[in-house]
Image (cartoon, rainbow, N blue to C red; front, side, top):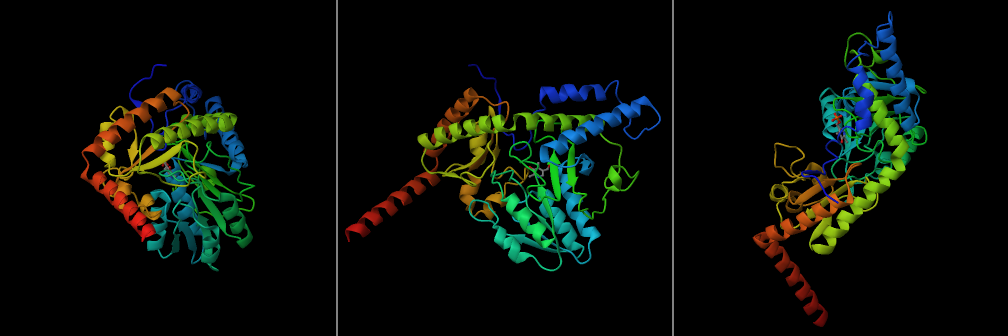
Length: 406
Ligand SMILES: *Cc1c(COP(=O)(O)O)cnc(C)c1O
């Protein structure tokens, strides 16, 4: 089977727009250009119908009421609205979150903290999991919100969302989850998982960029103050003329995700395991970052000891990938997510994130594995660092042997 270069393997950063999503959107850029708020003519009604349909498609994927879907410009805005909106509606609030959240959550928490809100950032274990009992112990009389992501964008770790939701429900605290990575990849159910607020991004799931949504439970009602003032769109929670083509795209992306969720997860998991096995069989001194099982089906984050991640990326110039230091783009600081799970600076600097998606093939995976193995071997040959790691390892082995004998 022939493959086309470059290969896109960075689906945790963004995904291509699915052809079917694009087809659904196109008419709303052309003939059906109406403003969904125009009540006096067919152009407006047509747009409103399309928006209503999308609301149903999105709600259906997470078992929510369509009227509880608020359209935003992406998961970043949804996270901001959830955290700042809940904080603004409460008296002397306390918010609980955890260390590997996306910057959209962590920085929103920092922002409300500067305004006097109490914030607790819980640690995670070596696999990136936050312990629900740590959450229970952190709850005070003032706690109004727990914000824990459904799945991590760097290491793919999936949190115990259902358990955390049940805990929050019992304590009468709102539960927000950033589901930008998880939606359409793993099953999500706002009822079964007791979720009150859920952030969605279209472009992580084969929809358009600059489009998102926030699920806001209306029964019982989440008290939330809108953060964008204006015409009072979206029940006053998010003013601004609706992005009708974007909304149609997000709706279609959700409908497709729902239709193919199980098969697609299987496809991604299979390719992921294939890549992992190729690499681990051919190379030593590798470390899988994140949880071995409780992870996104398409995410593989590996540290290649003795190899600089940036150099490896440069060597793999015909494959689109991210490194553990490239995530905060401009800076070459090791990733705070890897730090939070206890990965040392060296191993963090040598980590690569493989993001496998809907359109990747077995032939692509085999090509990438082959290229990566050759490139890692080449870099290790010229790496004094790797020789030291091997020597230390051998010394430890020897002294263990001596210890046994003595
Ligand atoms: C991508 C991402 C975001 C930001 O979403 P945008 O739609 O790009 O604003 C937030 N949280 C997580 C976990 C993400 O992966």
